[in-house]
Length: 609
Image (cartoon, rainbow, N blue to C red; front, side, top):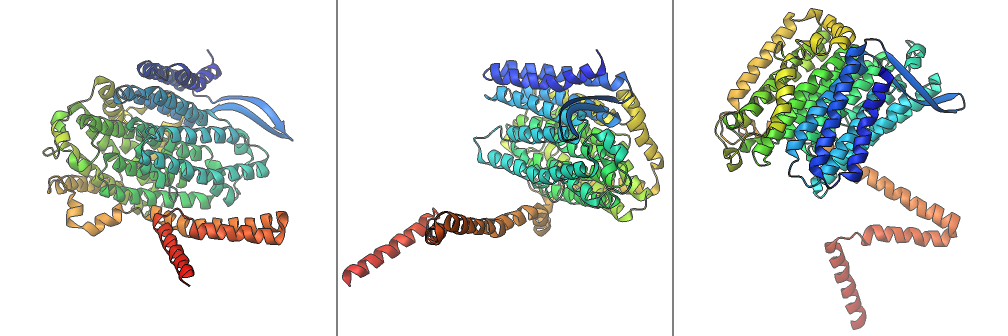
């Protein structure tokens, strides 16, 4: 079977699995779970074949039609970045599927859930293999839609419904800029094909083009100012959090920016570097004020996505892709480990109500701690090979302000990691749920063991073994970038961060069942906990956007309905009716009672008079 045929199977197998599960296995949850899991492992095997088969680029294109001289088609472009992303996405997703078999065992809507996982895999794999911007955008929107369905799995709860809508709408804001960037790219170069764009794009790339295309990255990878949806997306089941926030949806933005890095002007790259490093530092600090274990990990994901974006901005897309791969392994382990803890503690998510789980859940604890060490970039763990290289690159290239922000992010990572380990696994149980906690079944412990012990520890050290052929182009180039490893600045930052992480481990053991930072400095805790951007967006929508929309409606009734349809008199009454509706008929019980009282008094006065 040739490479193109393998790609056909990889892309369309999950679509077939989703359709079959939705049509025939919707009420047969167990069968749907194992069917989707088997399909996911088959896809992972095929992706591994693509990875090890050849190091040459795979190109295939089928023209669907033409608009003028513009060719619109469907095709594949598999380069070194795509090979690595294809393997990481399919491999991590397969183990998340197996974890979901145990985690969702008691869920009555398992058929719908696993169908959603399959359609999500189809969507994200489409982004990975796409050879043009239009195909990328179509699958980009499918990823948004499928993630909306998965986050809203518990749609009968208000928080899940609101979180899914928030994620969907926020991503559409970024996608508006993305599609405008595609239109501008078409106007400037007359093509949307990646290979042709790379040939045509010179050094003088318009700043506007890069900024518009970057909007898609800001939305999908939850970067400032469109980062507000990611933490709320924790309302979905934990396997969804692992799938979306580890290797797939949020990483798609990083992968896309690495693929089109030749279309980014120096000014755009500089903004990405600064905003990414700032996001990494801010999100790492905000994680210190979260008690929900999944939300703390979500802020950790925001921080690492900022580091990846910073690497692209520094001109090292290979390091960004390498960190994306390493991050996928240890962050998937952390989210799945959190899911194991939540299930073992009878669906308790508050870290202040946990504690003492090291003895009760030893496998989960060991894998979680291993992934945490990788997250902290402890030397020779997977995260160190990529994260430390990006920090080194900032210093090596003379970007000292960015280096300072990344150093702060590294310190914050060790602080919230030490806090999490102390609150969850050490000390005495702080609730009945923690007291009666138990280890998870093998369908949940096996995935976190493979991803945590094998890959979170050894992926970077054995990169040339675990991902052999793609490492020749991506990983080896990244390792060459790391020729400046273990220089004084990064060594000092790393050592200092680890020491502070150990001190935070001690610090958060001072008060049993309470957050030490909140106890000692409530104001600092409140500053880190408060949702500043959410507050700003709520103010803007309520005070600016809504009033502007009401003014537009008023003009529509007055001008369109009045002058054009009903002439001036009818339009005036229509406008007055709109005003009366806005003022008097607001659906508020208190306001209605006031108007009833005033009307009754007026009626009484009229009768008495």
